[in-house]
Image 1 (cartoon, rainbow, N blue to C red):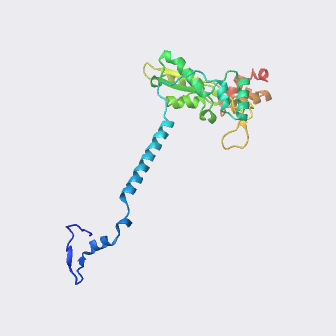
Image 2 (image 1 turned 45 degrees about the horizontal axis):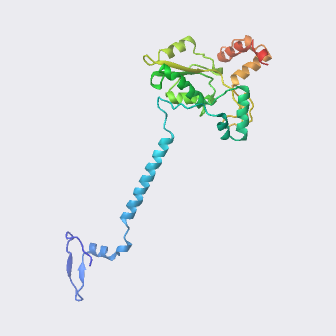
Image 3 (image 1 turned 30 degrees about the horizontal axis):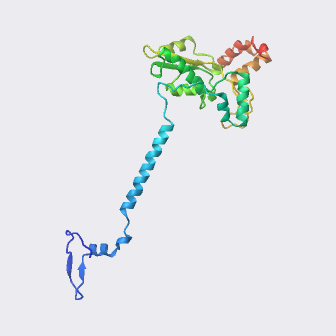
Length: 261
């Protein structure tokens, strides 16, 4: 038997000679569809619920993977160099050895940041009460992932740029004065400064393969250019108003280039 709602009009229109009842068109249509052929809403709801659960789990995992550190940076003992080498390929190991030969004791950006924060804790220097500034070269590779300046900028959330090409603090007294007046009340300033040098994947000092390029280029290009210009002679005596920063580099290097060479 197939029962229709009591609210359907003319539930039974009459009885035929064979004793069959003529039902309304709506009920007759519903009765004509076998029960086993109707779409299962329960199965569809279960699949939808599972999809929502999987999506929520994926979002939670993604959020955990990119979660930023808080004021208390986890500080661990300096990692073993052998452990670092174990995760590198043959060319990366060669590059690492070359860097160590030129700069004994060189550390990765994350190691330097952790050691700095560990040393500054006793002075109550934290992210919430510190203004971070940096005087480094304008070279875009200084903002690459994993570099100290990129890590520090991400950690403190902002930075006051003090430098220009070569890493010199070209902002001068006026710029540093402005920087010091932006410090949080009773807070601190933290500055990273200095030049940079690139290494190719084969360990060549002063060369770097930049993203999207097929050939190596110099790094720091401004410092190496100033050195070459001084060695060629005559460039450093000119004060180029359209190239003030490079002129300053040449004047600073002109007495040291022979010794460097």
